[in-house]
Length: 611
Image (cartoon, rainbow, N blue to C red; front, side, top):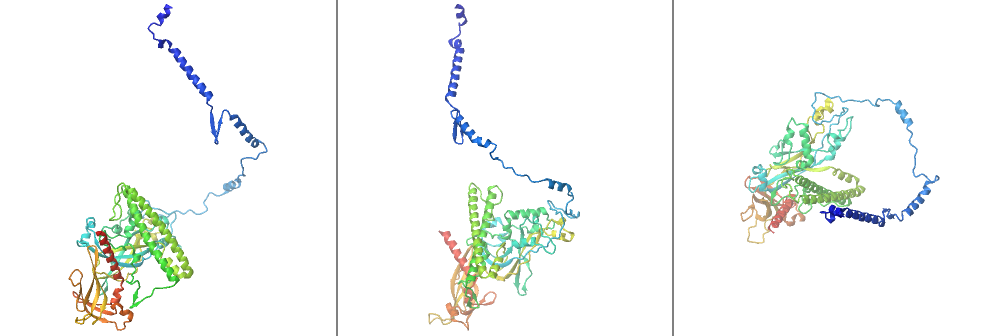
C-alpha cells in the first residue's frame, strides 16, 4: 500500500484518471452514432416518391413486375433496326473511275511586269469583263437659301471669315440636289452581254461607294453661257478630292477611303450639311423633295389663268402615292440622321475621338448609355414607320395598277434605290443667273485588279473612280439679294378716296430683308414716280422707283380682282435698267410664298426666344 502511495505522489486526480475519462467519452460518441443510425432511416426521392428502408422491398417488387413482360422472348424489341445502304457498288465504281478531273484545269496567265498591290485578289481564269457606264443623276433642282453663320463656326473654320464678311456673317448660297440611282449602278456591274462576264462581286463587296460629287456651274453673260467651272467643296467638310487627284494613289489608300465612307463619312460626302447658324434656320435644306414650286394660293397660274387640279381616281391615287413616297423619303432622312448620331454616341462612349457631324459634337459622361438607348429606340420606331409606309405605297400601287398600269409603272421607276445627293455653291453673286449639273464619282471595281485582266482591258484598272454621265443642266436660277420686293397690287389712276389728292396711281408691295439671322417684312404703298421704299427711310430701301402702270387691254373680271390686272414699269436708279412686272404673277410666285414662310418662321423663332 505504501508502495502505491509513493507511485501517485505528486500526480493530481485528472492525470490519474485521464485514460478512464477518454474511454467514457469514446463510449458516449459511439453510442450517439449507433442510436442516430438506428433511429434515422436512409431515404431517396425518385420521381416524386420517397423510398426508405421500410418500403424499398415493395418498390423493388413493383419494378420487377413492370420489367417482367419486357423480358419475355415474345416481347417486341425496343430498338428499330434499319437495313444499311449498299456500298459495294459505289465502292467498285470508285475503284474503276479515272483519277483525272472531268474538266481541263486552266491556270491564270499573269503578266509579271504588271503592278501588284497588297491583298490583291487573283482569279483562277482570265475573262473579258463588261465595261459599265454609271448612269447620270436625275431630277436636278436648285434652291437659294439665306442664313447667318454662327460666330462659333469661325473659330473652327477660319476660312469662313473671308467667305462671309461680318459680323453679322450673313450668307446666301444656292443648293443643288439630284437623285442618284444606286441600284442601277449595281445592275451595271452585274450585267452579262456579248460574251463579257459580270464584275465579280467581291471586287466591290456588293456596295456602291461614292468618292466625290462634282458640282459644275455655268454663268449667263452677254455672250451666253460661260465656260464650265467646278465648284469647290465647302470649307471644313469631308472630301477626298485632293487625294483622288494624286497619280500615285494605291490600293491601301483606296481601301482607307472606302473604310471611312462605310463607317459614317459617306453621308458627309454626298449630303454635306451647312454650317451652324444663328436665328432663323431653313428647315428644308435636307429635304429637296419639298422644293417643288407651288403658287401662293395653292394653285398654279399659267398665262394669267388658274389651272384646275386634276380629278379622278387615277389622279387621287397618284397623289396619295406621291405623298407616301415624300413621307418615306423624309423618314428615311431622319433614320440616316439617327444612325449618324448613334454612331457618334457609340464612338464617344468607346473613347474614340471626334463625335457627330460638325456642330453636334460627341456625347460623354455617365448619360451616354441613356443617349444610345434613346437613339436606338428612335431608330427602331423610324424603321417600323418606313416598313409601314412601304406597305402602304405597295397597296396603293396595286390599286393604281388595276386602273392604269402604265401610270403605276412610271411611278415604280421613280422608287427603288434612289437617294438624294446635293452640294452647296457658296460663291454666288446676287443678280447673276446660273445653271448647274451634277456628276458622281464612284469607286472603280477594277482598280488594283490589273493582273486579273487581259492586256487589252488592263487600262480599266488605272482610274481609282468611275465618273457618272453628267446630269442634265438645271433650269436657270437668278441669285436673289437679301433685300427683295414683290408688287402685289396696281391701283389705277383716279382710285383715290380723296378728291383733292393728285392721284397718278399707286402700287402696293411687300419688301423683305434678311440680316443677322432674321427675315423682316414691310408692306408699303408707293405712288407712280416715287421710290419703292419705306417712307420712314429705314432698312426697307430698294434701288427701284415706279415709272408707270399700264392696264391689261384684255383683262377679265377674274383678272381685275384685287387690282392685279396691270403692268407695272420700274427703273433701277443705280443701273438705269427697267423692269416690267405683273402683280398677278408676283402674287402667285413660289418665291413669295417661300419668303412668307421663312419670315413667319423667323418671327416664331424670335418670339419663342423671348418667352
